[in-house]
Image (cartoon, rainbow, N blue to C red; front, side):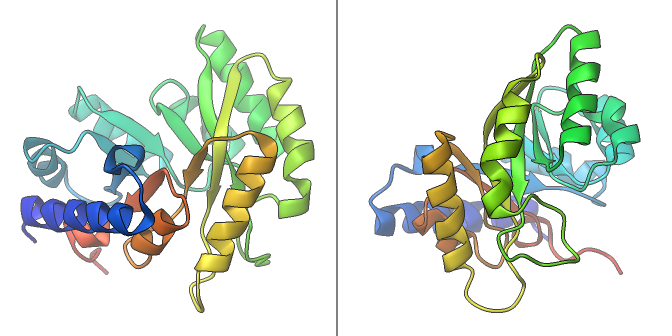
Amino acid sequence: MDVAAGLSRVRERIAAACSRAGRDPASVRLIAVSKTKPIEMLREAVAAGQAIFGENYAQELREKAAALAGVEWHFIGALQTNKARLVVGRAALIHTCDRLALAQELSKRAAAAALVQRVLLEVNVGREAQKAGVLPENVPALLEEVRALPALACEGLMCIPPAEGDPRPCFRLLRQLGKACGLPQLSMGMSADYEAAIEEGATLVRVGTAIFGERAP
């Protein structure tokens, strides 16, 4: 996979989606999802101008952050409370805060490190039993609890819509929730649907396969 070419194609499609939606391309930030990819591919992406990377596994984030300085790391995977210590302070933004116990642990770790950890609330927009995320109707209550924690700053919402069907209703729901809660950041859209997500208001898109190619089996 030619990483630079993949990045160029994705950036062109982001710009086109923004044009269709009447948006400034600068309003959308591209997160290159680099889970399981070797550090050499990440260095290729950096050489092509990519500055933000997303990791799904806490240990992998720790290892890659140690090996590749000068970039912004986002944590985008399911996070167990006992792995919070590996992520706080390394990730500029944690996209997957979905329950009070995790938020409390993140805040505790951040306070101990004398920093404020930025987070997004993960929302289970498709109401899928197998997926993480707070249900849409419970977002205001969780947000109030998170905002009461001293070392967290909640900036927005994140979702992964169902794999089947049109994702746009889910993206619209997240946008409406964000607006109602006063949360400007919307992390939504992956390789298969990031253009639709941008047209529906995404400010952060998480793209891996379209940049780095398919993951090894």
